[in-house]
Length: 148
Image (cartoon, rainbow, N blue to C red):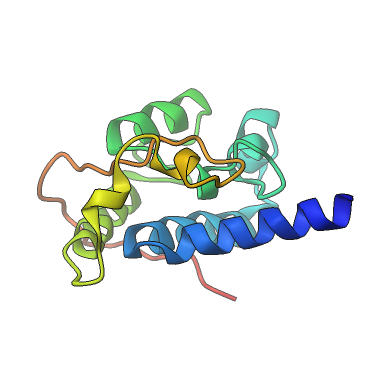
C-alpha cells in the first residue's frame, strides 16, 4: 500500500545519497538549504517550492544537475543572482566542494553517467547525474546552511 511505497521512496533516496560522495553532498546541501530558509519569501513561490521542498518530485536534492543546468534552473526560478539566496560565492563554493568530493577515494565516476540514477531504480530522480564545473572557483565568504 501507500506506506510501503513511502518506505521504498525513503530507502531509495537514502541509497542514492550514500552511493557517492557527490550525491551525499548534493542531497545534504539542498535539503539543508530548504530547511534553513523555507520561510524566506524567495522560496514561497510555486517554482521555488517545487525545486526545494523534499515532498516535490522535482526537488533538486534528488535530481542532480551539472553546473550549467543548475544555473539555468535557479535563474529561471529567480534564485540565482549575484546577491540572492544562491549568490555567486555560494554557487562557486558548492561546485568547489563537488569537485573535491569527486576527488575522494570513495568516488566512483562510473556510477555518475546520465541515466544511471533511473537505471538503478531510484524513484523521483531526473537521471541527469553527471557533475561538472567550469574551472577553479573562489570560495571566499561562503557560509554553508547550518545542518540540524
